[in-house]
Length: 122
Image (cartoon, helix red, strand yellow):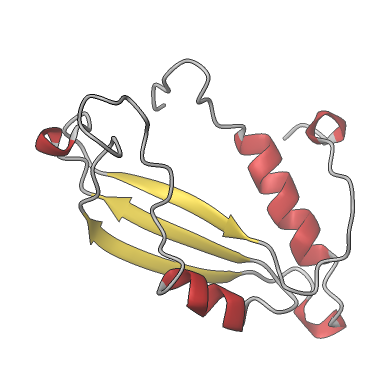
């Protein structure tokens, strides 16, 4: 399991639950239960936005490239984008590669309230 910095933990149960919810509530009955997946490899972003400022880089996707693909594709089902960071120490990471998931909600998502503490346990 990956060690997260304090305050930056990732709630996998909530991530999976929200992806499943968005997928199963598609306005297109034929697409219910499906998810688009976009994979990018060999990423080399720095861990921090600027040297010495301590602010983490928080967006492995770009709005002009992957964001444009997601906006056009994820109309009635969500898109899971997976970015494989090389994780090099000279970029501020811990020296090992890792996958960075990003969920993109469908354009046609209806307003809703999501509560992860109500999810069933696996």
